Image 1 (cartoon, rainbow, N blue to C red):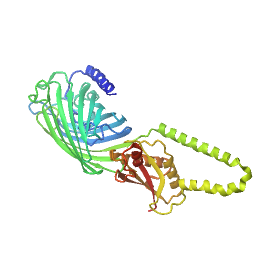
Image 2 (cartoon, helix red, strand yellow):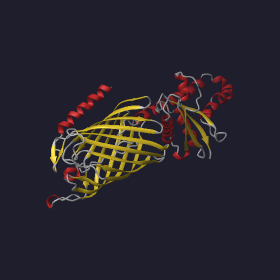
Image 3 (cartoon, helix red, strand yellow):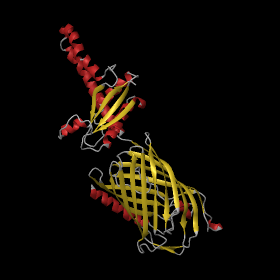
Image 4 (tube, rainbow, N blue to C red):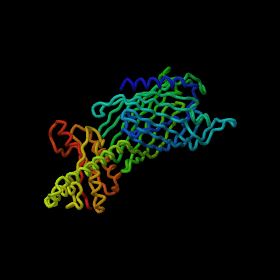
Length: 458
């Protein structure tokens, strides 16, 4: 599997390097993250959840984003909106497409024949991320990001983007914990040698370091970043390419999978495409689209087939002894009716009653192999409109605590699919705090990896 990832990365590197043409100063150098990992310009190293789909919309204002040698301003101010769409195909591979739209810009030094465009579309950016490994419960992880840009902006005006396909491979190293995440990006920017405005440009090497602190769990993240780049040929001696940026921001999380993002950066040095300062603000939305509809339909088909088989067998058992009709009438309520009432009680006795229905999971998974028990609970709620349900999600002691939330969300999705209103479903995350078995064998762990249901009437 790792060999296939490296081979795919190598082929993409050679293909895009072949497309590289003449270099032009990029008037849209800023980059917001297409990935929902808490950072703004630093790429995280940990892959997203399988099936995660999301959209980022971030407004970005830059002061003096491009200056030429001697301190002359080429673009004085720029206001842009960055729209990104991302999707995680599998755990180790996700893909993002990002398009900046320049809403306004102004500057000096432009003649009448080549006046500065006030607005337009920037360079389209494609960002595939390949996770190579993740060890010790995300304590150490590594990914390869092969960022590619297309010269869509320069088709409108030279100041709206680079006039070529650009390729920037990067290695992302990172670590994640309950309270702190960190990521380091090392990248190499492929640039043909060229002189521009009495400045020389060559291939570029850079690094970005990001720190993300979960200040208030599930509510507020605070991040800080450091960026630096230099020319490969003249490290730390080429003012046109040497730059440093410092900044950070906050991310407010909401219960509806929408995050609000804001922050600011300051630039240091005389690099040709680094703003003196920039301010950003926006929103990020994401949703997990798994389990796939195909698998759900298969489970529904199996369930209907089993129920049909049971209904066909039931009359046959009753027809075997037609001469004992009186005994069958007395015995039938004791054997069949209590089972139906146990599975589908019409009126629970009291608030807080725990139902017998439980859902169990594989290690570090939220996949529901058989939704029968959840569908039984859904039937209870659809027949009793005054009732609500509380989902309590558990993990075993060897699992990442985040899987409790994922399991609760997966079960809630099945209940909603079966006609239960979302406002009638409450979630309580227990994690590994209340094990039903203290053993270390797999059967013991399966008992602890569970979701339970409690009736709520208030």
